[in-house]
Length: 233
Image (cartoon, rainbow, N blue to C red):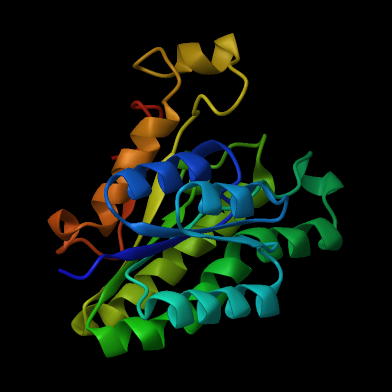
């Protein structure tokens, strides 16, 4: 039986690191990246591959994909995690901050889709999971750039899913609420129907489900994992 492989980006800590660890526990060979060096160390700790590359480094991400494919001969899954784009009051954020949001949130997803899709097509399938935010569809003024960019990510995932589903390649977005990798604030916790922050291991298990065969008929979707925080139906 062929051992499956996964790339997890921006995974030096927090949700990304939890996802990488969980996939390794599930038997995946895992390649981990981050800009800090922590992802490279984690990938090696997990018996896989590690890369120090920023999400806005297109050439670096393309080189990582080539290296993973050269080493393992296949890429079954990509989990696109990311750092946080600039925050601030809406009209205080200028063009430079908005362009940074594109580079942090959208560019890596586009880059890895372009690099990995030919590989996945040739091997008969694969799956992408993009870590988004609960606020993609209910914008939060505390995170204006994140909201806008990840709403765009929803459109991108749907366009991608429509074009590549027949080749057995899926793309979904995972929309976390407030997770315990962040400092807890009482007012945020109290607004959540479950009255607690989510755990990084819960996000990791959901990501693993979305790339698994159990989610084989799910593509182009936005799955909220937010303890009931969002209200729209």
